[in-house]
Image (cartoon, rainbow over all chains, first blue to last red; front, side, top):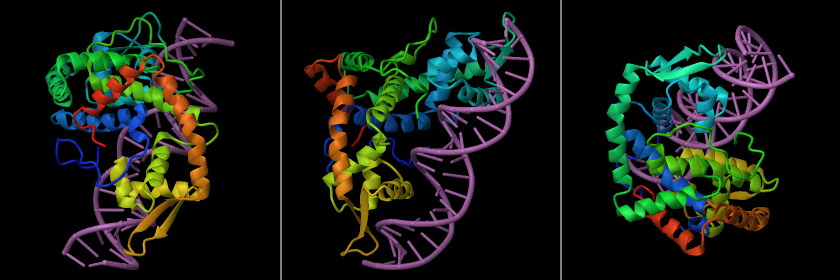
Length: 158
Length: 158
DNA sequence: TATTGTTATACTCTATAACTATA
DNA sequence: TATAGTTATAGAGTATAACAATA
């Protein structure tokens, strides 16, 4: 997905280029960090072809069995229509099921299949390992602090 | 470009949905924060139709007049070929110029036009205002701390 | 041969708008 | 009328591979 980073390690910043005000901007630092983390996440998931978004969807459905597509859309900040193709993909892979909701026949109740649950259980340790690699230079107090500060950014709901 | 957030304020997290392990994951928090910040950035730039990426390119060329496209590609973590269309866009708007480099006639030396410099100067205060809004709940020490911690994530080069 | 930029192309992600079926 | 999901469609962003000009 990324730009063919053969290494798992950090990118080398280009020689002799000045970044002006960019490093002061929180959005810039967030973006740089996220690009690297996204790439590492994808390569960390053995052959499972799982992106952070797909992983997030599996976690959400697992934590909220029977949830509706619209709720999922809100939770992952996607439009209803975008959720359709995400779910199509997961359903085609046999990881998720859409069950017509008995109480409201317009809605689908979402569930993980047994396969989906097994995959999720297999992925979780890999995600933890990835997480550990990303945070390896921070001590426990710093990790807590970072999560706390990120959560206090405006516009960082969820 | 965003999901029609009429408000500048934070999204309301969906009711009664559990997020499982997601909030523990730094990549998840980064992503949530970045989506919100990206959307706010775009709506903060008056009518200028400037995304964070385009703004970053303007800043980089301004700070490194005469830089080559390949250097720019490295700096913004894009493929050479992707940089072409970014520059096409900026050149069509009269913000950037490609000048054949005298020392190496394969390469283009990149420069802001006078228009580009003026636009950049006009945008900078708007970016500062946006930044202030994003960070409004953090005191100065916390802002420094957040930047420092983000810079110490592995894979967060730049 | 290697590098710089370009083109042609394709793929992914996402949104908008209009549609169906329920409510 | 309003809501839940879907479809059709379009746009943005990005990458890969092949190419021309230059080194």
